[in-house]
Image 1 (cartoon, rainbow, N blue to C red):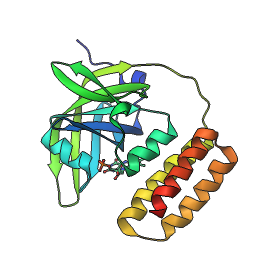
Image 2: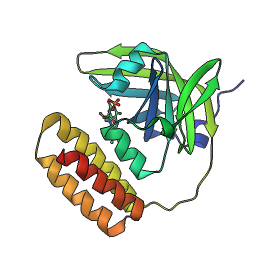
Image 3: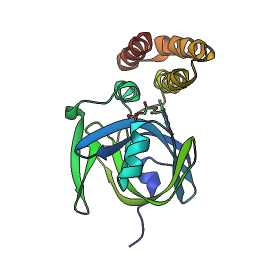
Image 4: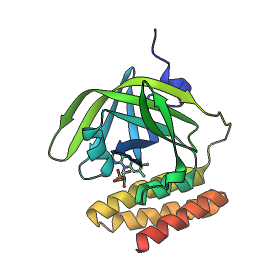
Amino acid sequence: MTAPDLDEFGICDGISETIVTTMKGWSPNAAPIGIIRKGDRIFIRLFKGSTTYHNVQSEGFLVANVVNDPVILVRSTFSNLNQADFNFANVGGREVPILNKALSWVVFEYLDMKVTEETLVAELKLIHAHVNRCTVKAPNRGYNAVLEAAVHATRYRISGDEKYLKLIRAYSAIVSKCGGEQEKNAISILHEYMDK
Ligand SMILES: Cc1cc2nc3c(=O)[nH]c(=O)nc-3n(C[C@H](O)[C@H](O)[C@H](O)COP(=O)(O)O)c2cc1C
């Protein structure tokens, strides 16, 4: 049987910003993680210290969820999601956590894993892929700006470098100009987390 074409599940060449769901025992976890695709090869690079980093090492799989909901993106960056945000699917006899709001989801196992002092790089092997729904939506600068602001917020959290606050302010201005209600709600949640 030939492997499904990942393009059809929204994971294309380059880095796809997905929300990765993993398990620790009975608890599901979600976090934004880039899926790196170079032709037919697929990788993830995880920074030491996150729950995802630990779960990937202790469990044999991860699920990459393609999501276009900016609020889920921000909430999963700063905290874990609620149980109600997750669903479970049986894949090859194993219950895997998926996000209710996923447009598509792809289950991966690992071909190879290299752990260094700072990071873990794993090459992924596709096990199962599923499309929940296809939506047509023009690119929205507000959504992209929420994504960028969330990335800079995680960098600020690690380094404390004030340059990231400046970038977050610039991206927040784009959200105010171009975002819809969801993007504006997401950026204000991001600011609430930053103020904590
Ligand atoms: C859009 C986006 C992409 C991210 N990509 C990665 C990544 O590829 N690897 C990584 O280690 N962290 C990445 N992060 C940071 C993690 O999502 C963040 O550290 C998160 O809090 C980890 O949550 P966890 O502790 O529940 O795993 C990304 C964050 C954002 C907003």
